[in-house]
Each structure stands twice: as C-alpha cells, then as structure tokens.
Image 1 (cartoon, one colour):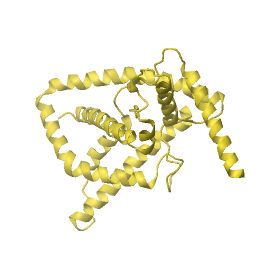
Image 2 (tube, helix red, strand yellow; image 1 turned 180 degrees about the vertical axis):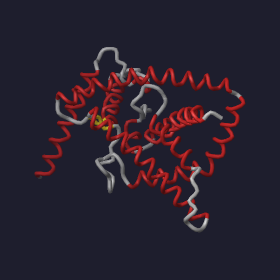
Image 3 (cartoon, helix red, strand yellow; image 1 turned 90 degrees about the horizontal axis):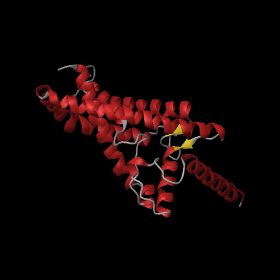
Image 4 (cartoon, rainbow, N blue to C red; image 1 turned 30 degrees about the vertical axis):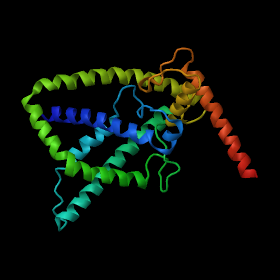
Length: 250
C-alpha cells in the first residue's frame, strides 16, 4: 500500500482520537470540574489535535523496530515503550517550544509539575505516554494494520481523508490568524499568554452572561472582540500577581 496514504490515514485517526481523549481528560480534571464546561482542548477550531497525529505516526513507525541487542522479549518491549515515550515527549517539547518562541503562546502549562522543563514537558506525562504506547502496541497497532488492509481494498475512503485535510487546512489558516492576533497582543503587553487560561476565561465569561457559544468555536463572538477578552485575561493575571505578592508579604 502507498506509504504516503498510510501516513495520512494515521495522522487523520491520531488527530481525531487524541482530541477526544484530551476533551474528556480536561473536562474531568480538577480545573475542568470547577468550570463545569466542555472546552475545545486544541488550538484549532475543529475536533483534531495535530500533536496526537504526529505521535501516532511516530508510534506506528517505532512499532516496527526490533531491539535485538537486549535479551528477553519482555525487556525488549519495555525498552521499546520507553523509546516511544521519549520520542512523543520530544514531539511535545518541540511543538510547545515553537508556539512559545514564535507565537508567545503557551498551549499547555506543566509549570506546577515536578521535574518540568519550561512548563512544556514533565516526567508524569512522559509516564502517561509510556502507558499509552503500551496500550497502542498491544491493543491498537494490530487493529490499525487491519484497517490499513481494509483501506487498501476500499480506496474510496481516501476521499474521506482528502475531505478531512481540506477542512483541516482551512481551519489551520483561520486558527493561525487568531493566533497571530493573540501573539501581537502578547508582544504589545510583553507577556506570555497561557492558552488554556484564556479559554477558561472565555468559558467563564460566556457562562456569566449566558452566551451560547459552541466549545468548538471559542473565538467567534457577537458583541465582544478577542482583544477585549485578552484585556480581561490580563486584568485577571494582574489580580493573581497582586494576591501572590500580598500573601508572600504576610
């Protein structure tokens, strides 16, 4: 089967599946339970997370590696899962770093986690990636191989994948325009925007004024602009800093 079609299919499945996992994880996390709202976990408008797409492609490629220099099948598998976790963590680090350096936006924040590096990666989530790698290898990888064989016999499905990428590219252009506006605001006010906090601020404000805004379209507004939301976000940051200074001096 065409290798390019395999990669595009895996990116498609990984992006959608990862979005669903993050959606439920964040909804039932401590902060998500406080807000009691379903919030789009990605920086794109639609239901997909490219980070998971790249990660699934990486896991698929790594799953074919044979670690012959280590004795014992169990130890070989453990080493493979460690390698998978390191690779996915590296992808996560590069993605986070690109947005911080180029866009002044922190898509996620692990600053409160032990052993974190720049708040982008941390040991706890690397362990999660290792567990997910094992789940992928034993439970998902064989099914993906079967799905790829099915896809080879039903190439009409490739049009579905093509449609996904068409929508994905349009969404990417729209979302990057939003990111560019946030970046300019961050540069003007010399701050680093924590994207999750901004989305939570939007969700709380929408709930306060009983606005019916779909969680898939967090940045589409009727009577308030993105800049106004950013200004409210900055005000909250100022209040938090003042409170921290006050508590420190007490």
